[in-house]
Length: 43
Image 1: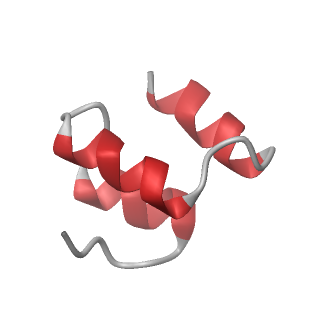
Image 2: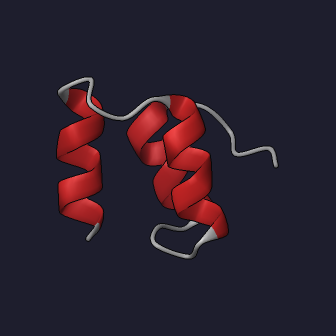
């Protein structure tokens, strides 16, 4: 799932708010959030 989320974020289909939802729902980790967005995850 990580690969698809990362790709869609890079394409602009997902925003930071979407990425936070993925962390909360355990689809990606906080570390993966940082790797994809370049920002620290803050709930």
